[in-house]
Image 1 (cartoon, one colour):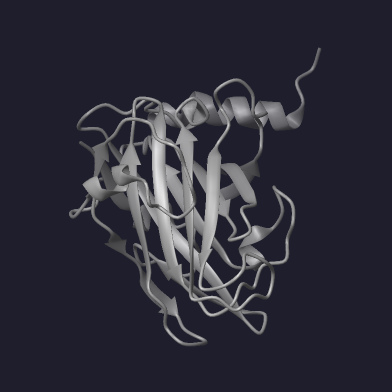
Image 2 (image 1 turned 30 degrees about the vertical axis):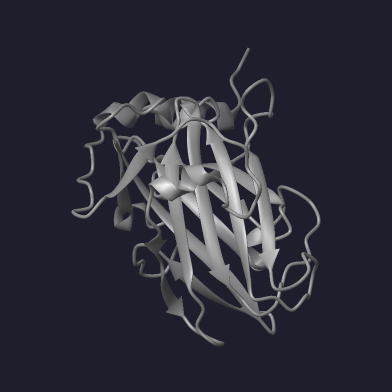
Length: 241
């Protein structure tokens, strides 16, 4: 039986990852504190979040009024938690399904690169209407390939909730801010390596927010990029406590 071209590319890629060299970490990593698992509400009001500080994000492209954007991160034995806070005046989000092109509307995004000896990383997007897009991304000979190779089964499902402040959680609503809270299990992240992280483990990562005004987008990021959210060599570092 002959292997398909796609499978041959996949196997060739993973057979050569050991040739890559680990990339240096950012000089000012964010410490990821450990927690016990807790229930998500979308508004970040669980007391577990009080154990860690907000990390500010920088608005890189501005089309409308500036708005504060920041995030928190924690981890447990089972997975990693994120909380985003985004000031906004309206919800420019109309997609009502998972696994769609969420980045074309209001959204927050997390990119996780756990094993820097191979260019395989995880991308997760969540809209204010609580729809998600999870992707595994591979860089093969300079070309980026996005995959959704898994099914959510057993303990692999991402948990996520969103909340809106100062308005309704519906498309086009006038608001003051929105929050996004999600939990990514380490069992889902096995393909990107270093799972589960131990105390002292470091991952490279970046966080983003897209906001649209009259169908034109502006964005925030944690670490500065040049032209693409996928510039993994410009990522910062998460250091697990």
